[in-house]
Each structure stands twice: as structure tokens, then as C-alpha cells.
Length: 448
Image (tube, rainbow, N blue to C red; front, side, top):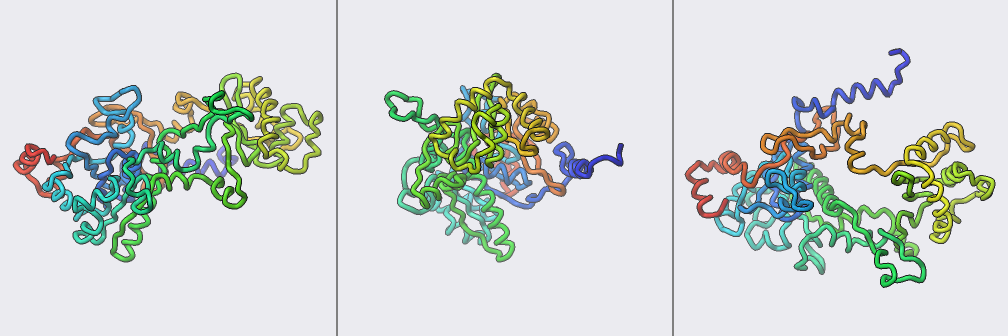
């Protein structure tokens, strides 16, 4: 039996042994010599960015005001776990948490001492706030020329809207990006918002614009660190949340630039592709993907429409890409899919790839899973993404694990969160040399 084992199975065994999340504890971490000050305020983008760095092993020091950051209170229906909002239990991972009041001069002086020893400072304050405190890049680079000063804001550090008072909100970025215009239920021809109030743009969840900004900033920080390795010099990084989310749009802006096309809302359909949509089933829904004419033909064949529609005579996908054609054919597609369960349709596509008229061509069909079904999926459980973390403070918590699998420096979640100011004594002793008396005085003064 072993002799007949496919080569890919041997590779899977080898790589799993190397990067299985269950055995990462003894392995080194890629960024374990990196010190990151996370000053992000009321910003999931900042928290998400520093989470990524902390998963690679960076020592992330999360600096909050004495009352704690607003993000700790963001949670569905006010639900908390030992006083922490559910959102922050996800993005407080692997970070040391200290408090510091930057509105007080002594607090700012402490911050300067930390920044002089840090590799990266991440901040999300309104444009100009750090400079006004004497903590801007130009001031801090005098203390630490190699400092990477990373700023995430709503509209960027310069431009006509840079000084707008509107804080950096995820849904504001979604609305301003141009992407959300094309999401949501389609407004039927001849109707308007008064008759179809439900036909409006739909937000993407959860906090996708903030996550985009955090991801791009983490990538930029790593690039800046590489540059510093070559030159010894730090630099300032500027990511605007709206710009970051715009980057996820892969064709609508350039389509407008090149052809004047405005991508309108078409619900679960797609302006540029067919067959490419979500469709209902008897037990939920599926995604249908047919990016080539043959894949759409294969689906028509599965529906039993080959002869009725003259499918074999089609020679181009172009006639099916306009909205009128999609609205003509989609009811037939939905009627067919509603007569089957999601799993039945998946099996049908697989069988067609083996025995169908156009085999191995078939349509991509994937069931739309509920959160419960995703949690129970054996593939993700075997890969450890839903393995709970045994946190020393919060107990057993299921926070989605890091996605990178790496053979030599695998990433990991060591703890999920910390209470406000939990690491004050440890961090301020380590970096500032503060003893109990100094720490006590700073607490009494409200600096910590």
C-alpha cells in the first residue's frame, strides 16, 4: 500500500510535521527581535496590523489610555468575556498591554523613552496629533534614526481631505471607496428607492476596509525593515484606509477609465462574468463559477437544457455578460438549484467532470457555509485554524488562529488578550528601568 501512495501525500506528511500549529511551541519566531509600539487608537486597522506582526513573534507593546481603548467595548449585543468585548479578544493576541496618558507631558516623555528603543511605532491618531504632542516622526527620528513610523488614517497624511474631522471608520471607507456602490440588491428597471427601499448598497463584513489597511501596513513595515537593514535608516509610512480598500477592487475603476462603464448593483450576479453568482438551494445556497464558455455550457447540460437552448452551437461567452442576458437566464438557474441540496449540486459537478459530455470541464460549485458549519469543517480543524487558545487570564478562548504555515518559523497565538495595563510593571521595568516607587507615583498622577 505504501508503494502506491501518491507523492503529494508524502509531501503533506512532511510539511505537516514541520508547520502543524500543534507543534510550533519549540520553534523560533521570525520577528522575535522586533519591538513594536502600537499606539493605535479606536482603530481595528491598527490592532489588526500589530496582531499580524505579533503572530510572527514581534514584541508588540500595546499603549492604551488609562481607561483602555475604545476597541475593547466593541462587541455584539454588549457581550463580553471577563469584561472584554469579543472583537478585542481576537485582536489583543500576543501583545503586551500598558497604559500611558499622552495628554500629560510626563506620559509623552515616557513614550519618547520607549520610542528611542523601538523598531516600529504604529499610530492611528488624527493627522497632526502626534506632531502637536512633540511625538511626530521628525521629532522621534532625532532620538531613533532607524524608527519605522507607521500611520494609518482615514484619508492619508496629505491631500484635500487629510484634515477632515471625520474619524477613520471602516464603513466610511467602504462607502467612499467606490466598491460598495456595486454591492447589494439590484434596483429593478423603472423602480426607484421609494418603491424599493431595500435596493441599496450592502456593506462588506466584518471590518474589511480596516483589515485591508492593517494588512497593507504590516507589509509596508516589513519592506521598510528590509530597507533599514540595507541602509540603517527608518522612514515614515502612510496608509489611508479608503485607499487600502480601493486596492481590493480589481477591475471596476479601470473599466470606467478605459470604457466609461459604471458597475451597477446586480445582487448576487456579476457585471463582468458569467456564470458567476450565488444561487439558492433547497437547504441554503451555493456559489456557481463558470469563467469560460465551456463551463457555462456544462452547467446548462447539467440542467438538461443542451438541446432546448442549442447550447452546443454557442461559440462565445459575450452574449451572456450583459445584465439583460443574466436576468433572463438566472431565474432558470435558480429554479434548477432550488430543486437540489447544496451537497447534491457539488456531487453533480464532480460527476459531470468525470462522465459529462464536456468532461473534464465542469462548473465550480461551492456550498455557502454558516459560521457553525465552517467551525465544524474537518479541513480547517485539521489545519488548526479553530484550535482554542488556553489563555492564562481569559481561559479557553476560540479565536481564529494565524493563517500562515511556515516550516522553520511557524507563527502562533500565545495568548489572546490582556486586561488594561496588565503589563505595566514588566514593560516599564524592562525598557525604562522604573521601580515600584516610580510606577506607583505615575499611577497616582494618572499618567499610567
